[in-house]
Length: 260
Image (cartoon, rainbow, N blue to C red; front, side, top):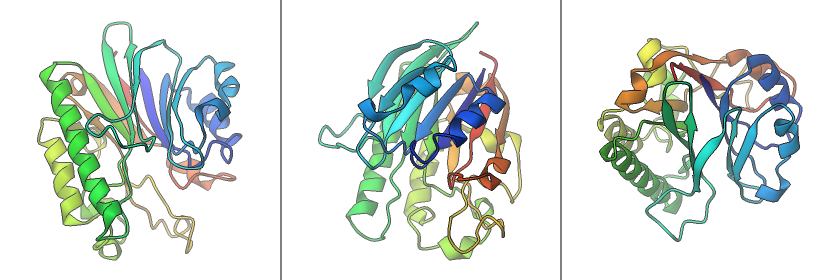
């Protein structure tokens, strides 16, 4: 089963590019971030006619996550547990059942956190604590799962073309990366690094200052796999070339292949 994550930076802006990539790449499941649309405004027919079931957790003009799946989605829930007053649409869960195994899909758009210091950074760190607690709960239940999406975390210096320029950014601050390591230390596997080593692998290039042409990118879109799901990992790749197309998102798709 091919499962992808893609921060599309606005469904309206990507209404041509996203279906084109879907037709070419043919993922079984896609977890989207930054749809920037309320649920009733999401163009679900475009994806349903391609055989996808559509589940959204939207918000006007900002944030928003969704799942597209060629297989039925079960037990869909919206919102990250731990803060009932959090109204930002950043998290969605559902279970997909393959031929031999089922997996809980946790799709997320983790807060950016800038500027640092400030309330936005405090919100980011608190959100990551809630995400760690959710992962711990799923591990305690022995539920096979993966967490994927735009984490807004640069895990290591090699995940940025120019790491020094990110030292004081919320994506690369020591406190942010410490929260990331707390997640990994629960026993999760970072799928891309389980398959690829070394620098030069990026999933985001800013629209400004010719970042794409200079390959001045960062890797912030990730898959974290629980032990049961990690055992099923066959591959993980970044569809880098999508960034060079017309009207691209500033992110590109990342996908895993699992023996489900």
